[in-house]
Length: 402
Ligand code: SF4
Ligand code: SF4
Image (tube, rainbow, N blue to C red):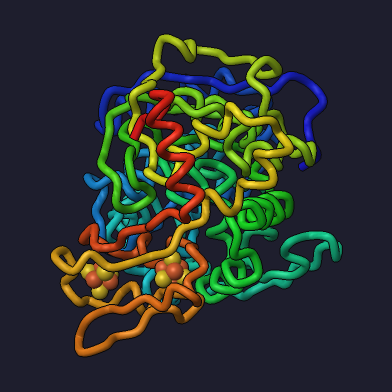
């Protein structure tokens, strides 16, 4: 898809809970307002790929880590009924081990969705990989994606509204990382270890597989230390757009971020992949102010950004990485010694010493991959010294919202 020249539309529809009829109605209402959805369905039978966010292979829908199955089901029903489409559901979960994605599919109860609707499940870790070559200036000059992503007629991204310790917020742009099969994600973290180049790497991937449509599950989001260790928070919304960047700008604003302070949104906007500026977005349905949740808890690593908004751009750019970088450590009291984190560390910075998990701080790249698979809130991401200084400034200025 090419970048859009006209004003992007984002539709916001209220949806109070996950009862199937409510979700279907909210999705349908939302899509009726989005430009071009019915054009997408015209011209005969289509192959539609739904890409939910299946981060966790162990936490069920009530934990608000993964896209809720009722939202996936509503989209399957919509495309089957309205477009007679052949629907696929596919992802690679947050684990760097390929055995986990089928578990994520089951724990999210998507197996029931496929059984009831005939939609086909595609485990991206087991799908034929396709190598993508980008120009040499890209942070990721080459990477592999699941080939199904390029074979279908329509890609529909179904992100979950959550905070993220590394990228601050996770939505449409971040959801695209899942098109890279398990082990390939390890290379992304190794090639892009700093927060700013990781955000650019995410935009590199998004640029290759821009979804035709994005429908966000913002009925119950995750606040605090997302994407896995935060707490569920009701927001009560379905948000939809054909411009994922605009959708991220609107959704992040609803939960109290400044969109252009989210690096993925800023970089995608600058590259012309969508609209990150609110004034250039046409919001339909509910208004942002009516549905905003400004006290939505931010990840603890986001605090310094609020302080940094008082600094000139050049200073912000210079200090962004050093202030936002973290290293991991293990909170022994919560640790069950399951070792999921050790197996998921792309930098091999974790080891087991006399049963305890030990992090080599010199090797840790602060990628949050351990945090993403720990179900016991036993990973603590510690800020850099400069990050702590900015956090203190944020608290002093009373802009700390954690
Ligand atoms: S920190 Fe979490 S993932 Fe790692 S061993 Fe302990 S409980 Fe398991
Ligand atoms: S210890 Fe955790 S944050 Fe550090 S590199 Fe390993 S997975 Fe990433």
